[in-house]
Length: 110
Image 1 (cartoon, rainbow, N blue to C red):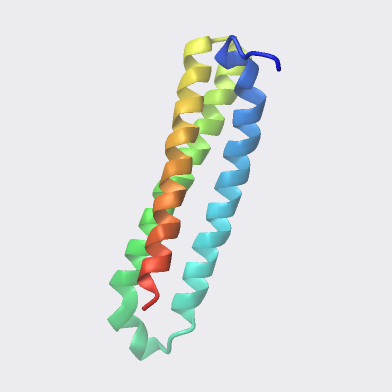
Image 2 (cartoon, helix red, strand yellow):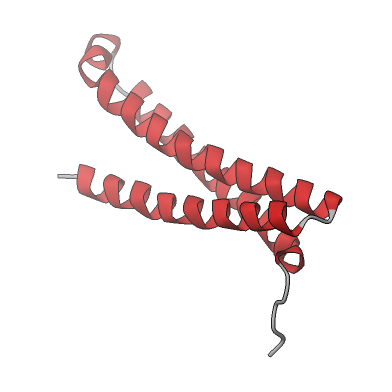
């Protein structure tokens, strides 16, 4: 098995994973918005805060995934191990955030 010796060797993987994760979270956010729109106008006021909170939490993960992708792209372009490493770290944080978002979604269903 080949050993990875530099974060630069992982930048393509980070770019791909970050973009895919951002897309997954964008679909999740669309699902949340669609669920909110399923309420009648007079009912939406009662659930607005709950759905806004869910969207902001999901958006934070989306932003992390996009940031990971951007840093990996910059690291690859500039041949910077440090920037590439930051992209990798942000991707790992984004993946952890997705676990948190998914767990919150499961716990919200009562």
